[in-house]
Amino acid sequence: MVDTPSIPQLLRETRLQRGLDIDSLAYRACVSKNHLIDLEAGIGRSFHSVEYCRKAVMMVAHELDIEDQVAALWREADWGGAVAKTRPIGLEASSSGLLPVSELSKEAKQRWWLLTAIVASGLIAWLALGRLDVQPPESTGTAPSPAKGLAGAEPQGSAATLASAPPPASSFRDDVDRAMSEWARLWRERNAAAYAGFYSSEFPGIAQHLGVRRQRMGEASFIRVTLSELSLRETGPGEITARFRQAYAADKYESNDLKEIVWKQTPSGPKIIAERLVN
Image (cartoon, rainbow, N blue to C red):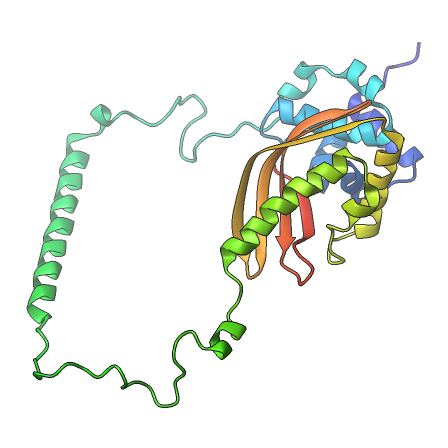
């Protein structure tokens, strides 16, 4: 009788048969290296839920072309105990939450009110001293001349000032918002050449990343990509990180994941310098 391999064994053995190392497979499957190491060890400690663990397993299986085998072997009970359980620091395992206010000791309440009174008194004293220190300006009887100013300073709105000023952040945000829609549209249309134009040469492993996407676009008879819950935040000079939920579906695979794309401002428009799943 031949023993049925477990999912961790199947993932590891298939990866080795394909001649892939951990880094290469993690990159191609769009999962973190730590997640892949945990999956092959059957630990799952880096996952916050069994559902997220299952998604990562199926993404790796999809890349290795063993989805059906892995799906047949999947048992939630096998991974439920392996996923990390977190609780607030300082609570015992049997604790269900923070203690209610009614159970605080009388002495603790007294200390709290005393501290509040001290802080309030200090704030009132500080405000009072600040009012005493403020003196009204002496009137000279004449209005200040608008012509007076720093020697050699150019008037506001000059051509030199406008030429050197950076473009407003809102304009870049609008460009990124439009780029996100266009990026998803080209993916749906499987236009690999135009899709690749959104990626910067600074993107780590750009050739391999676009090669995998190009192959999947060519093999799929259809691709659906829907973006929702989009939020943009500035994460550096000329850099905006877009966080969004991506619903993806193709012939043999579908997923719904939280992702981030980092866009960099360039003379030719926003370019992608990083793309990752969010745990």
